[in-house]
Image (cartoon, rainbow, N blue to C red; front, side, top):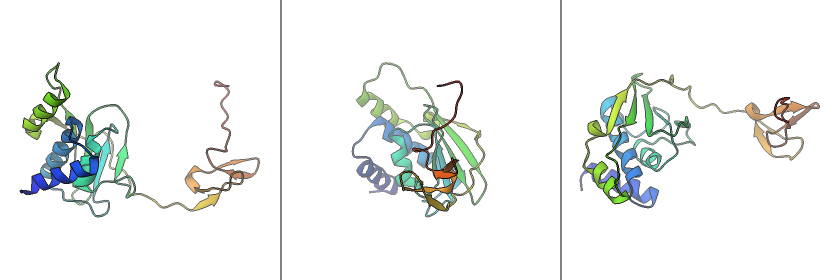
Length: 177
């Protein structure tokens, strides 16, 4: 089995089933590897900003090592099959946007269609529109003085002299009462 088949099998095992959406992410990850000279990211060398939270993101996690926990998989939810990839070592980046597929295809036909496409046929290659995000930060945490749950400092609010988590904090908005 060649390297690409091994990667596909890993993506399927992680995702749980074969589908067109997984194939989109698989081809996007392979194309990004080619365009940006990427390898699996042990830390935050590779960054992906996904504009959706659909099936393809699972393939990107498995193939490129981008994950929410490491801080190198971020979501800029726009409902688009678009992915921005960044190589921190070289400073290069690319945004891959899925091209429209023929109308009226079943799920099975869609999978077959994407499987038969080259990445060049599947994606428009564009410049990234979001600057490379800074590396993930580790925040101090504090206990919420209402519920007692520890919360990162960046998400603490002060109300009545107390440190409150966002769930316990009552926001002030005069227009949406």
